[in-house]
Length: 181
Length: 197
Image 1 (cartoon, each protein chain N blue to C red):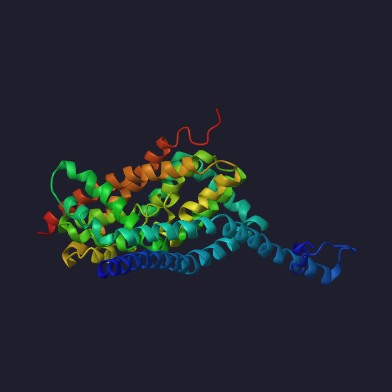
Image 2: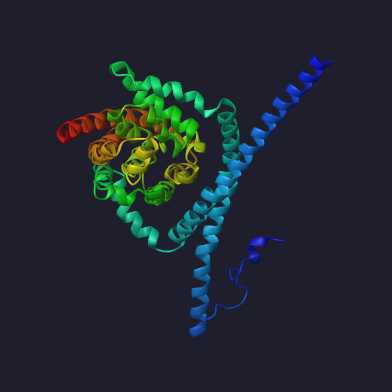
Protein backbone atom coordinates (compact mmCIF):
# COMPACT_ATOMS: atom_id res chain seq x y z
CA UNK A 1 0.00 0.00 0.00
CA UNK A 2 2.73 2.44 0.97
CA UNK A 3 4.51 1.80 -2.32
CA UNK A 4 1.41 2.87 -4.24
CA UNK A 5 0.99 5.81 -1.93
CA UNK A 6 4.57 6.89 -2.55
CA UNK A 7 4.09 6.57 -6.29
CA UNK A 8 0.97 8.71 -6.21
CA UNK A 9 2.69 11.35 -4.13
CA UNK A 10 5.69 11.32 -6.47
CA UNK A 11 3.59 11.64 -9.63
CA UNK A 12 1.47 14.33 -8.06
CA UNK A 13 4.52 16.29 -7.01
CA UNK A 14 6.29 16.17 -10.34
CA UNK A 15 3.16 17.03 -12.31
CA UNK A 16 2.51 19.87 -9.91
CA UNK A 17 6.12 20.98 -10.32
CA UNK A 18 5.91 21.04 -14.12
CA UNK A 19 2.58 22.84 -14.16
CA UNK A 20 3.84 25.31 -11.57
CA UNK A 21 6.96 25.94 -13.65
CA UNK A 22 4.93 26.51 -16.80
CA UNK A 23 2.58 28.84 -14.98
CA UNK A 24 5.47 30.78 -13.46
CA UNK A 25 7.09 30.99 -16.90
CA UNK A 26 3.88 32.46 -18.29
CA UNK A 27 3.70 34.94 -15.45
CA UNK A 28 7.32 35.95 -16.07
CA UNK A 29 6.83 36.44 -19.77
CA UNK A 30 3.67 38.51 -19.41
CA UNK A 31 5.46 40.56 -16.76
CA UNK A 32 8.39 41.20 -19.12
CA UNK A 33 6.08 42.10 -21.95
CA UNK A 34 4.09 44.57 -19.88
CA UNK A 35 7.05 46.18 -18.20
CA UNK A 36 9.64 46.22 -20.97
CA UNK A 37 8.12 45.55 -24.37
CA UNK A 38 4.77 47.36 -24.49
CA UNK A 39 6.11 50.69 -23.14
CA UNK A 40 8.73 50.67 -25.84
CA UNK A 41 6.15 49.80 -28.47
CA UNK A 42 4.06 52.78 -27.38
CA UNK A 43 7.06 55.05 -27.62
CA UNK A 44 8.16 53.68 -31.00
CA UNK A 45 4.60 53.94 -32.36
CA UNK A 46 4.49 57.61 -31.45
CA UNK A 47 7.79 58.22 -33.22
CA UNK A 48 6.67 56.33 -36.33
CA UNK A 49 3.37 58.25 -36.33
CA UNK A 50 5.28 61.50 -36.14
CA UNK A 51 7.58 60.46 -38.96
CA UNK A 52 4.83 59.25 -41.25
CA UNK A 53 2.47 62.21 -40.88
CA UNK A 54 4.76 65.19 -40.56
CA UNK A 55 7.54 66.29 -42.87
CA UNK A 56 10.19 65.10 -40.42
CA UNK A 57 10.34 61.82 -42.27
CA UNK A 58 11.42 63.51 -45.47
CA UNK A 59 14.51 65.16 -44.12
CA UNK A 60 15.45 62.12 -42.08
CA UNK A 61 15.08 60.15 -45.29
CA UNK A 62 17.34 62.61 -47.09
CA UNK A 63 19.95 62.28 -44.37
CA UNK A 64 19.77 58.52 -44.08
CA UNK A 65 19.39 57.75 -47.75
CA UNK A 66 22.89 58.92 -48.54
CA UNK A 67 24.57 57.31 -45.57
CA UNK A 68 22.61 54.12 -44.97
CA UNK A 69 22.41 52.83 -48.52
CA UNK A 70 26.12 52.70 -49.27
CA UNK A 71 28.90 50.74 -47.60
CA UNK A 72 31.08 53.81 -46.85
CA UNK A 73 28.08 55.58 -45.33
CA UNK A 74 27.34 52.64 -43.04
CA UNK A 75 31.02 52.49 -42.10
CA UNK A 76 30.93 56.15 -41.10
CA UNK A 77 27.88 55.52 -38.89
CA UNK A 78 29.59 52.56 -37.24
CA UNK A 79 32.85 54.47 -36.65
CA UNK A 80 30.95 57.33 -35.02
CA UNK A 81 29.05 54.91 -32.76
CA UNK A 82 32.31 53.16 -31.84
CA UNK A 83 34.35 56.21 -30.78
CA UNK A 84 35.38 55.39 -27.17
CA UNK A 85 34.05 58.68 -25.75
CA UNK A 86 30.72 58.47 -27.57
CA UNK A 87 29.95 54.76 -27.36
CA UNK A 88 29.19 54.66 -23.59
CA UNK A 89 26.80 57.60 -24.06
CA UNK A 90 24.91 55.85 -26.87
CA UNK A 91 24.67 52.57 -25.00
CA UNK A 92 22.07 52.78 -22.22
CA UNK A 93 19.10 50.51 -22.83
CA UNK A 94 20.04 50.38 -26.50
CA UNK A 95 17.51 53.22 -26.86
CA UNK A 96 19.49 55.02 -29.56
CA UNK A 97 20.02 51.82 -31.53
CA UNK A 98 16.32 51.01 -31.26
CA UNK A 99 15.23 54.45 -32.47
CA UNK A 100 17.71 54.52 -35.34
CA UNK A 101 16.76 50.96 -36.21
CA UNK A 102 13.10 51.96 -36.36
CA UNK A 103 13.87 55.01 -38.51
CA UNK A 104 15.85 52.83 -40.91
CA UNK A 105 13.02 50.29 -40.91
CA UNK A 106 10.55 52.97 -41.98
CA UNK A 107 12.87 54.03 -44.82
CA UNK A 108 13.46 50.42 -45.89
CA UNK A 109 9.69 49.90 -45.89
CA UNK A 110 9.23 52.93 -48.14
CA UNK A 111 11.90 51.63 -50.48
CA UNK A 112 14.35 54.49 -49.88
CA UNK A 113 17.00 52.09 -48.63
CA UNK A 114 17.54 48.78 -50.46
CA UNK A 115 16.32 45.78 -48.44
CA UNK A 116 19.65 43.98 -48.62
CA UNK A 117 21.22 46.80 -46.61
CA UNK A 118 19.13 45.77 -43.61
CA UNK A 119 21.81 43.28 -42.53
CA UNK A 120 24.86 45.59 -42.55
CA UNK A 121 22.66 48.34 -41.08
CA UNK A 122 21.85 46.13 -38.10
CA UNK A 123 25.56 46.07 -37.31
CA UNK A 124 26.28 49.68 -38.29
CA UNK A 125 23.85 51.08 -35.72
CA UNK A 126 25.14 48.87 -32.95
CA UNK A 127 28.92 48.92 -32.36
CA UNK A 128 28.23 50.61 -29.02
CA UNK A 129 26.26 47.68 -27.64
CA UNK A 130 26.97 47.24 -23.94
CA UNK A 131 29.64 49.96 -23.83
CA UNK A 132 27.79 51.69 -20.98
CA UNK A 133 27.58 48.47 -19.03
CA UNK A 134 31.18 47.20 -19.00
CA UNK A 135 31.97 47.72 -15.27
CA UNK A 136 28.64 46.21 -14.21
CA UNK A 137 28.92 43.34 -16.67
CA UNK A 138 32.43 42.55 -15.48
CA UNK A 139 31.30 42.77 -11.86
CA UNK A 140 28.57 40.23 -12.65
CA UNK A 141 31.39 37.98 -13.85
CA UNK A 142 33.12 38.54 -10.48
CA UNK A 143 36.08 40.35 -12.03
CA UNK A 144 38.74 41.99 -9.86
CA UNK A 145 38.83 45.82 -9.79
CA UNK A 146 42.16 45.70 -11.68
CA UNK A 147 40.51 43.71 -14.46
CA UNK A 148 37.71 46.28 -14.70
CA UNK A 149 40.30 49.04 -14.93
CA UNK A 150 41.94 47.34 -17.91
CA UNK A 151 38.77 45.82 -19.33
CA UNK A 152 36.82 49.04 -19.91
CA UNK A 153 39.37 50.65 -22.28
CA UNK A 154 40.18 47.26 -23.83
CA UNK A 155 36.56 46.71 -24.87
CA UNK A 156 36.10 50.33 -26.02
CA UNK A 157 39.23 50.25 -28.21
CA UNK A 158 38.38 46.83 -29.55
CA UNK A 159 35.02 48.20 -30.72
CA UNK A 160 36.74 50.85 -32.80
CA UNK A 161 38.12 48.02 -34.95
CA UNK A 162 35.41 45.39 -34.70
CA UNK A 163 32.52 47.86 -35.16
CA UNK A 164 33.36 48.78 -38.77
CA UNK A 165 34.69 45.27 -39.37
CA UNK A 166 31.30 43.80 -38.42
CA UNK A 167 29.65 46.08 -41.00
CA UNK A 168 32.02 44.85 -43.69
CA UNK A 169 31.40 41.20 -42.76
CA UNK A 170 27.64 41.79 -42.74
CA UNK A 171 27.89 43.60 -46.08
CA UNK A 172 29.52 40.59 -47.72
CA UNK A 173 27.10 38.25 -45.95
CA UNK A 174 24.18 40.22 -47.34
CA UNK A 175 24.81 39.25 -50.97
CA UNK A 176 21.74 37.51 -52.28
CA UNK A 177 19.58 38.77 -49.44
CA UNK A 178 16.21 40.02 -50.76
CA UNK A 179 17.70 40.65 -54.20
CA UNK A 180 15.54 39.98 -57.19
CA UNK A 181 16.98 37.73 -59.81
CA UNK B 1 -20.53 50.70 -37.28
CA UNK B 2 -16.97 51.69 -38.11
CA UNK B 3 -15.16 52.54 -34.93
CA UNK B 4 -12.55 54.59 -36.74
CA UNK B 5 -15.14 57.24 -37.35
CA UNK B 6 -15.56 57.63 -33.62
CA UNK B 7 -11.96 58.75 -33.22
CA UNK B 8 -11.84 62.29 -31.94
CA UNK B 9 -11.86 65.06 -34.55
CA UNK B 10 -11.05 62.81 -37.45
CA UNK B 11 -14.60 62.26 -38.68
CA UNK B 12 -15.24 62.67 -42.37
CA UNK B 13 -16.07 66.22 -43.34
CA UNK B 14 -19.62 66.51 -44.53
CA UNK B 15 -19.84 70.32 -44.47
CA UNK B 16 -17.74 73.06 -46.07
CA UNK B 17 -14.17 73.15 -44.95
CA UNK B 18 -13.86 75.70 -42.11
CA UNK B 19 -11.95 78.84 -42.99
CA UNK B 20 -10.61 81.91 -41.25
CA UNK B 21 -8.93 81.88 -37.86
CA UNK B 22 -11.13 79.12 -36.43
CA UNK B 23 -10.70 77.15 -39.63
CA UNK B 24 -6.94 77.28 -39.28
CA UNK B 25 -7.28 76.09 -35.70
CA UNK B 26 -9.53 73.26 -36.80
CA UNK B 27 -7.12 72.18 -39.55
CA UNK B 28 -4.27 72.35 -37.04
CA UNK B 29 -6.21 70.18 -34.61
CA UNK B 30 -6.89 67.61 -37.30
CA UNK B 31 -3.24 67.52 -38.29
CA UNK B 32 -2.34 67.17 -34.63
CA UNK B 33 -4.59 64.22 -33.99
CA UNK B 34 -3.54 62.59 -37.26
CA UNK B 35 -0.08 61.98 -35.80
CA UNK B 36 -1.56 59.98 -32.94
CA UNK B 37 -4.07 58.14 -35.07
CA UNK B 38 -1.22 57.01 -37.29
CA UNK B 39 0.83 56.12 -34.21
CA UNK B 40 -2.11 54.21 -32.81
CA UNK B 41 -2.42 52.19 -36.00
CA UNK B 42 1.26 51.30 -35.79
CA UNK B 43 0.87 50.42 -32.11
CA UNK B 44 -2.05 48.13 -32.83
CA UNK B 45 -0.21 46.38 -35.64
CA UNK B 46 2.79 45.82 -33.35
CA UNK B 47 0.58 44.56 -30.53
CA UNK B 48 -1.32 42.26 -32.86
CA UNK B 49 1.63 41.18 -34.95
CA UNK B 50 4.50 40.61 -32.56
CA UNK B 51 3.11 40.30 -29.06
CA UNK B 52 1.04 37.08 -29.23
CA UNK B 53 3.91 35.07 -30.70
CA UNK B 54 6.38 36.72 -28.36
CA UNK B 55 4.40 35.92 -25.22
CA UNK B 56 3.95 32.27 -26.16
CA UNK B 57 7.58 31.91 -27.18
CA UNK B 58 8.78 33.62 -24.00
CA UNK B 59 6.66 31.29 -21.91
CA UNK B 60 7.92 28.17 -23.68
CA UNK B 61 11.58 29.10 -23.46
CA UNK B 62 11.30 30.33 -19.86
CA UNK B 63 9.70 27.04 -18.89
CA UNK B 64 12.36 25.06 -20.76
CA UNK B 65 15.16 26.93 -19.03
CA UNK B 66 13.52 26.47 -15.65
CA UNK B 67 13.00 22.75 -16.20
CA UNK B 68 16.58 22.18 -17.37
CA UNK B 69 18.03 24.42 -14.68
CA UNK B 70 20.49 27.23 -15.45
CA UNK B 71 23.17 25.61 -13.30
CA UNK B 72 23.63 22.90 -15.94
CA UNK B 73 25.65 25.20 -18.15
CA UNK B 74 28.30 25.76 -15.50
CA UNK B 75 30.38 22.89 -16.84
CA UNK B 76 30.56 24.63 -20.17
CA UNK B 77 31.91 27.72 -18.42
CA UNK B 78 34.62 25.62 -16.80
CA UNK B 79 35.54 24.05 -20.12
CA UNK B 80 35.78 27.45 -21.77
CA UNK B 81 38.38 28.57 -19.24
CA UNK B 82 40.97 26.16 -20.62
CA UNK B 83 43.91 27.65 -22.52
CA UNK B 84 44.75 26.57 -26.04
CA UNK B 85 43.65 27.41 -29.52
CA UNK B 86 40.80 24.95 -29.82
CA UNK B 87 38.98 26.39 -26.81
CA UNK B 88 38.67 29.81 -28.48
CA UNK B 89 35.48 28.93 -30.37
CA UNK B 90 34.02 27.51 -27.17
CA UNK B 91 34.88 30.63 -25.20
CA UNK B 92 33.83 33.26 -27.69
CA UNK B 93 31.08 31.55 -29.69
CA UNK B 94 29.50 28.62 -27.87
CA UNK B 95 29.64 29.96 -24.31
CA UNK B 96 28.24 33.43 -25.19
CA UNK B 97 25.51 31.80 -27.28
CA UNK B 98 24.48 29.34 -24.59
CA UNK B 99 24.69 31.83 -21.73
CA UNK B 100 22.72 34.50 -23.59
CA UNK B 101 20.14 31.89 -24.61
CA UNK B 102 19.74 30.32 -21.17
CA UNK B 103 20.50 33.15 -18.74
CA UNK B 104 19.44 36.05 -21.01
CA UNK B 105 20.53 39.68 -20.70
CA UNK B 106 21.99 40.72 -18.21
CA UNK B 107 22.52 37.51 -16.20
CA UNK B 108 24.49 35.98 -19.09
CA UNK B 109 27.57 37.94 -18.02
CA UNK B 110 27.73 36.04 -14.73
CA UNK B 111 29.18 33.12 -16.70
CA UNK B 112 32.41 35.13 -16.79
CA UNK B 113 33.10 34.02 -13.23
CA UNK B 114 34.38 30.66 -14.44
CA UNK B 115 37.04 32.28 -16.61
CA UNK B 116 40.47 33.55 -15.51
CA UNK B 117 40.73 37.33 -15.11
CA UNK B 118 42.53 37.84 -18.42
CA UNK B 119 39.59 36.42 -20.39
CA UNK B 120 36.82 38.25 -18.57
CA UNK B 121 36.70 41.51 -20.57
CA UNK B 122 36.83 39.55 -23.82
CA UNK B 123 34.02 37.26 -22.73
CA UNK B 124 31.89 40.20 -21.65
CA UNK B 125 32.50 41.91 -25.00
CA UNK B 126 31.62 38.76 -26.84
CA UNK B 127 28.48 38.00 -24.82
CA UNK B 128 27.10 41.54 -24.81
CA UNK B 129 27.54 41.78 -28.57
CA UNK B 130 25.33 38.76 -28.98
CA UNK B 131 22.26 40.01 -27.11
CA UNK B 132 20.91 41.58 -30.33
CA UNK B 133 21.85 39.15 -33.14
CA UNK B 134 20.02 36.42 -31.20
CA UNK B 135 16.77 38.43 -31.20
CA UNK B 136 15.70 37.47 -34.71
CA UNK B 137 15.15 33.84 -33.73
CA UNK B 138 15.11 33.85 -29.91
CA UNK B 139 13.54 37.13 -28.75
CA UNK B 140 13.26 35.82 -25.18
CA UNK B 141 16.95 36.55 -24.64
CA UNK B 142 16.52 40.31 -24.58
CA UNK B 143 12.88 41.38 -25.01
CA UNK B 144 13.51 44.86 -23.61
CA UNK B 145 15.73 45.75 -26.56
CA UNK B 146 13.71 43.99 -29.22
CA UNK B 147 13.46 47.00 -31.50
CA UNK B 148 17.11 47.02 -32.51
CA UNK B 149 16.08 44.11 -34.71
CA UNK B 150 12.31 44.55 -35.01
CA UNK B 151 12.67 48.20 -36.06
CA UNK B 152 14.55 47.23 -39.19
CA UNK B 153 12.64 43.98 -39.65
CA UNK B 154 9.35 45.92 -39.79
CA UNK B 155 10.60 47.60 -42.96
CA UNK B 156 11.33 44.22 -44.53
CA UNK B 157 7.85 42.99 -43.57
CA UNK B 158 6.29 46.06 -45.16
CA UNK B 159 8.02 45.18 -48.41
CA UNK B 160 6.36 41.78 -48.18
CA UNK B 161 9.51 39.69 -47.74
CA UNK B 162 9.94 36.90 -45.20
CA UNK B 163 12.10 37.55 -42.16
CA UNK B 164 13.72 34.11 -41.94
CA UNK B 165 16.61 34.94 -44.21
CA UNK B 166 17.47 38.14 -42.33
CA UNK B 167 17.10 36.53 -38.90
CA UNK B 168 19.35 33.58 -39.75
CA UNK B 169 21.99 35.75 -41.36
CA UNK B 170 21.92 38.19 -38.44
CA UNK B 171 22.50 35.29 -36.04
CA UNK B 172 25.31 33.74 -38.08
CA UNK B 173 27.13 37.00 -38.78
CA UNK B 174 26.65 37.83 -35.10
CA UNK B 175 28.45 34.61 -34.14
CA UNK B 176 31.37 35.45 -36.44
CA UNK B 177 31.54 39.00 -35.11
CA UNK B 178 31.52 38.01 -31.42
CA UNK B 179 34.25 35.47 -32.13
CA UNK B 180 36.49 38.12 -33.70
CA UNK B 181 35.56 40.60 -30.98
CA UNK B 182 36.46 38.12 -28.24
CA UNK B 183 39.86 37.34 -29.72
CA UNK B 184 40.76 40.98 -30.37
CA UNK B 185 39.65 42.16 -26.93
CA UNK B 186 41.60 39.31 -25.35
CA UNK B 187 44.75 40.44 -27.19
CA UNK B 188 44.23 44.10 -26.22
CA UNK B 189 43.54 43.13 -22.58
CA UNK B 190 46.72 41.03 -22.46
CA UNK B 191 48.78 43.95 -23.81
CA UNK B 192 47.32 46.41 -21.33
CA UNK B 193 47.76 44.05 -18.39
CA UNK B 194 51.42 43.60 -19.31
CA UNK B 195 51.92 47.35 -19.52
CA UNK B 196 50.22 47.84 -16.15
CA UNK B 197 52.28 45.19 -14.38
